[in-house]
Length: 561
Image 1 (cartoon, helix red, strand yellow):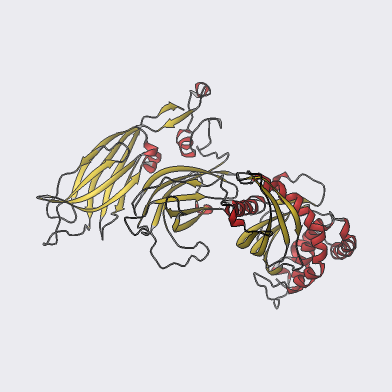
Image 2 (cartoon, rainbow, N blue to C red):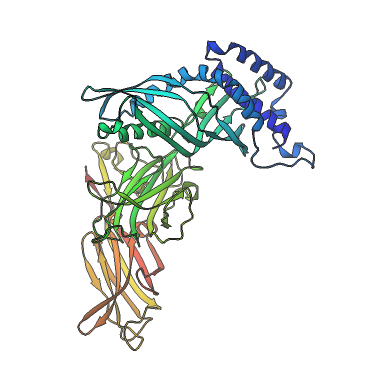
């Protein structure tokens, strides 16, 4: 941004600071000078003027715009007024944060409150500002901030055993990006109705805990529980998409508040090629999944013992609050029993890549660190199926059932064409079992790896329904790496959404069989589409593909729950 536009932005930031100052009797002189400056800048500004001042096309061609502008001038002024901010904001922060800390108070503590809170003498430093395109009637600004502060924060905690401890929060180091939304724009000073602020991205948040005059580690579990409480409080109170809305002008700003917009149905299918962390045997993997890293919103899979290619086939449902910016995070761990679990790898998927109402089948590569995203080591990959269902969707996915019915979003989607028995369904909780006949045609394979000395193989295919164990096998095709079978097998499936088809290819030998590769398929796609034909690569083989035709003939039933 140019200097003029930056100046306007600075004035706007000043208004946001004034909102804090007006709450304190100790900041009267600061309020008067800040208001005078603001009034002078905005006295003759209309809504269209404020838009034009932030638009690059308003300036001559010699003005160079950059996406992020340094804010040395703002930091200098912030340093000057920081003592007043400390006085004005400390009590406000204390009264606002204490109820949140109490909400997340760990079970080992009977009480948790502030005994002292001041922001210290070191002001935060803003390292950049950027304007985000907003199609609505508002201005969105992001400020990057570093704070290596020296606040004086002391927590009074009391354990269930009746032991009271003063715990000091020290060595705070924070780097993050704050988002300010000035919306709606109006033709009345100060030209916007409300300010919404949020922590858009938390890059770093480090701190240490110390018992005043003692050692916090002397009481087992308290340090970890307290640290988790603080991080959860920050995450749930101010981290995007959570936002605080401060009215500037009278009006109804309910539409600016955070609201759920839909649900995300996730099927954690499997993982492949995980890292082995155990000296004896193999890793025992499990996965944590979340959209917001709050303990009450995180989902955990079961542990698969001694397996680097685990199959979970588990369903989870999440609340979505901002499809444009939120993402699903998957972290895979090695279970170590009583010891802390060891991270095997992690991955993220942006929710804005999902098409509403359409199931997305995806493999995601695992990395060591989500922030770096540069990892040349092969840590394996995770297989997911995802379905995003916005609330009130009108393309056949609208839920005809009330919220009392224990159905996943996918089950709702599959039953949403309507049911004349809705009146009967209201009598009790029910959930759908997707029952039917699953027909699999093994058409052919191509480019199979050779297994004998003559560079050939005698392949055949074994089909297994994982949940019931039902099996069928094709005939053997001798000395062929591109066999054609064209054989069809039918399976009666009792619960299609929670079953899987395992297709394994073997080489037939006189005294046994040699494993060549496999592919694992959920029934989600065939249930939704009815029938499809596709080519599936063989996992665990150097080469090879299977051509299959899958067909579903539904016979849905209900079960009481």
